[in-house]
Amino acid sequence: MWDMARPELILKTIERNPGIRFREIMDELGLKNGTLSHHLQKLEQGSVLRVERTPRVARFYPLSVKDEEIPIIKRLRQETPRRILRLLLDVDEVNFSEMFLRIKRSPGTTSLYVTELVDDGIIKDRFENGKRFFSLPDKDTVNKLISKYHPDLMDKTIENYSDVIASL
Image (cartoon, rainbow, N blue to C red; front, top):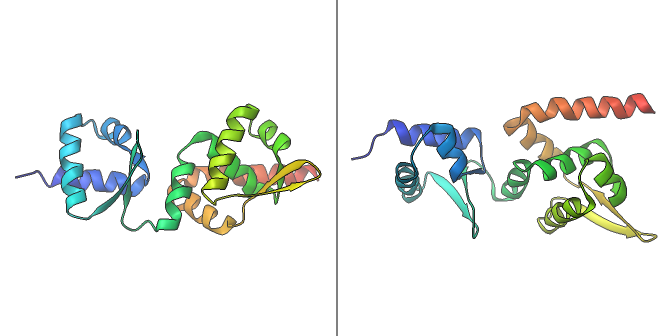
């Protein structure tokens, strides 16, 4: 028989932090690997959460998260993609050179994550005069997910927007 308090605590943690990884749940709740594995397996068998498995990472989502939101939520949990998305919320379009300078990341790191964001269909790219430009076609969804799961980022986005307006 398994303790009902732990599964509920695990589910609440996943609901507050969709896309959370196994290790993050373990650290946040102070659970041992075997204990967490056991409870997550029971929860998954009971179809009360969704799991995205890649070769090295398992991410956990509540059932309330829609399929099309998963790639965005996953990227919002990563620092560099989060910086890129915040930048693209503040501007309509940005070229690659300006992007890596504004997010304060190397061109290589920026290129890696921009490629993933384009492949995920979260951002769009276009070429003009030998330059690559990026935009965020669905700002509403990204804003909604940030305000729901990362409200602290909204304050930073509003501050950045205010800075842009002030500089005009």
